[in-house]
Image 1 (cartoon, rainbow, N blue to C red):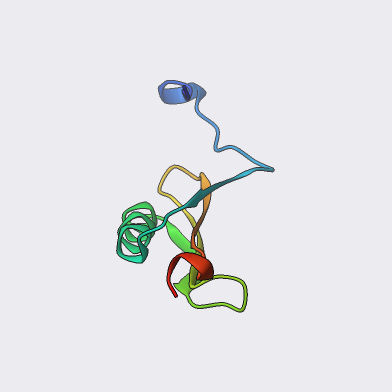
Image 2 (cartoon, one colour; image 1 turned 90 degrees about the horizontal axis):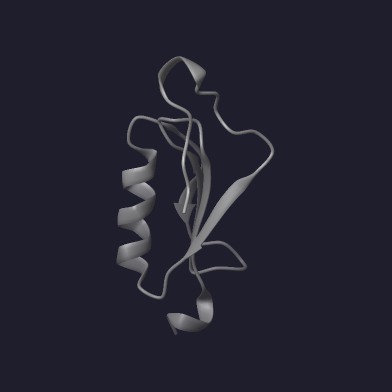
Length: 75
């Protein structure tokens, strides 16, 4: 369960990121794009040496996300 503060009490979280990992690279990309909409991309969703696809973004509420699709699931 998660919750945020209502209206004028809300402050963006600091010092933490949420990591989501998907087996399906298309699902991972859809989630990354949805979270990035209205926010800002920290690291584009792309291939890295440790993952088939990985990206970091801040959503429109200031929450930071890491989305990945690991290499071993996609070979």
